[in-house]
Image (tube, rainbow, N blue to C red; front, side):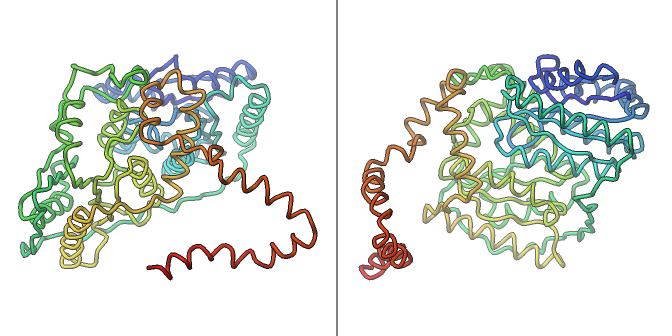
Length: 459
């Protein structure tokens, strides 16, 4: 078979993910692998439609397609996202329709499920037959057991493509018929109380609903909100994945464009941040992905602690739970407070007006109280994964993270809880005595709530 590999790493041949593909190719010389580094060469593909057409023609002639990408902030990198957008913008979907496809990623398993869900949904939107995904750890190729799993996955993919095996669909086509939003102009403004409010957007000409939602939000703050369009910031390109920032947070782009200065002098001083964007395929745009990817010059440490965050979304947000999860995860890891999402999935303009006005009031209220909602599993689980890897095998490359995690108390390893360790050492052996064990079992529910009742009684 002829298999076209769509490389999703800005590092091209130096991609860790690509080495897994190369390993499969060496083990299966009976198949022809043709690799296109579409993420690395996105600038040329975007500017030169003939080059883009060459890639699409190779996809058209292929027997199967393999998506191979590293994880960038819970998703694919902005360059890969832009390539996917071009497929739809240039109406190249027919080249993918009916092709068997699979995906391989490498990461530290930090929300790789959301990236794979996104790619699978895109493949299904393109009419492809999705034969599975392989979410590898970035070190798995070095382990003979994991290499065997990789080959098993690849052989299953080949077999499905050769035998035209039936595949399942996980994601329904998106359906969105937005209202034509016309703000009433009757916003009851709320005073931010001297706090800096930033509305950050990528709104472009023709996105009237998003633009009007931004106008209404700004009016809801009494005009005391700064609106910044990502398209007006000097951003030379997406994150290159070089990890040079890991030692001391100095980015390879430092001094070469305006992104870092914008982040430090405009974004970080804001108290309330409203993210305003339109859905492009099944996520926010590649421009937004570029914004989040480039923020990685801060590596894995939180830099928006205590900020109040809200989202204005134009598009079928209610049908995109993975997109919402990625955005919530990002800001929970940042130790910010995600207040709410508002989208134009409303019955009429009056309802959308009311939601936006309420959101502005809610943001100011949370800011006045300094309220930060406790993190969910997204923030807790994600942070523990980062904690363990930065403490361990990532420490050499991400020394800046290690320093920050020590000062922020991220290294909260439960093994250091000596009181709990002592209690376990004494009580657990006692529960091996039948009579004690039965008494322990009978008092377990009461014991779980006893300390909490004491707090309530003393309130």
